[in-house]
Image (cartoon, rainbow over all chains, first blue to last red; front, top):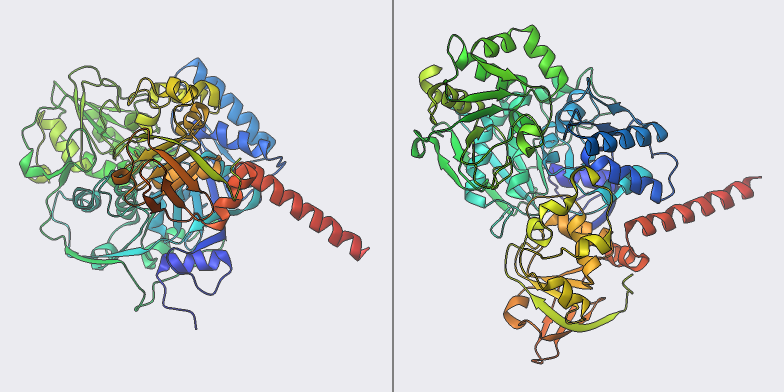
Length: 425
Length: 190
């Protein structure tokens, strides 16, 4: 019998065609999905040509989704996108272009490309988001992605696993991202501390079991910024329900053995956890909300691969319903995909936000990478439901970014200062 | 191309912890929409610009061969490959670091830049020290002081990729082998 393994180890062993794997082992494994976007797409598909490939290993398992700076905000970018379109056509790849676009980590899940039990490779560090579906989803560079597209394989080192067991129900105003923000504060951002670097972070427990898929995506998303190799939520009924009717390939529902080995086991009761805010200029500069309330802000955003999903828009709308954004604050909401945009339009969420004085933007990474929709000038202070807040990320080196959950963002937009959402809920 | 059994010898340029992607190559040179145009020559001119303005000219003058770095070299959570091309363009033959970010390590190996992880390297090597690195077994000898250190040997696959000049060349070779095998297989059946 094979050794007791974690879910990550089982997925890697399966993909490598091995009975078992151990942390540290180098493997060549089959990938079940490779995805890229506008920004990296040119390099990825260029490398694919360079290696002499005329087609990808499986055109149902490779997808291009425009998100980083879409629609093109300038001539250089327009030319880049034209080039990527041409190459995508040449390789006969599905392309989610303007009108069907969305943040790729969301689109691969909602369009059924990402299914439980596979290894997926995305050309962006927040690829870890997809681990919420019980797959091993890895961020990789352009060369890696291109070679995986050509061969259907990649080389990997089996990571050691960390097990995080969460208990309790989140208090009002606290959301799943706060849990990962808390850990980021403890474990360190992709810096010298980064205790979770190169490790698989497995998230379990009753808290997770009761969580929606939207919340699970947000939770896994920010594990990227803790430097983890992958984040993973073992699949359950919620996962199965999400995948049903969407999956474009066969899902595989795997679970960790009870006696599997972990380098670290953490149990955390989150029933008293406050919302967590990352202060300028690092994602691990995290404090509980109560320490920072009252800080003046001028821009508030709900968007991105961490918190631009329907649940996030609902929370913002619940708080802003019948209220107004503070006259000295500009609030911008960008749904994570066209699909979410449509759902929020139909259920009245966008109308509520609009009446409160919110600008509804399109789906793009712009509000988090500074490419479009949100650009900060000197002295501006933003609070946003984005994953990162490094100096100058959204424009001026003299601007400041606080990151928080959408409830805190909406409450702060009403008050004009960082505020506790509890009084509005 | 890094030969499997190579013994590299040269001087070290030394930096501390947390020299991330942004410091190796300032973001202005990532090229925005022009990404995909990865010119080693062009990007090399700006390597380490924010850390040491003389880096490129010193490298070109043949002053150094290695970068010796502290923890989390190449961090910053970026999956882009530009910093690798900048270092190669400047003439860096190998990075020997206390630790390196996952993205940097993969991207470097994939693009033919040698990265070795070596505990204690920054304590044993000062700027300008001459080092000898055994690529296969990871042994590092400080020729200047006589100290010996051991870095983690690279996995076989990484040595193979480096040996062919990078992941694209490696894959090209593998695909050609597969094709030859399939063709031979087909002939037998006929």
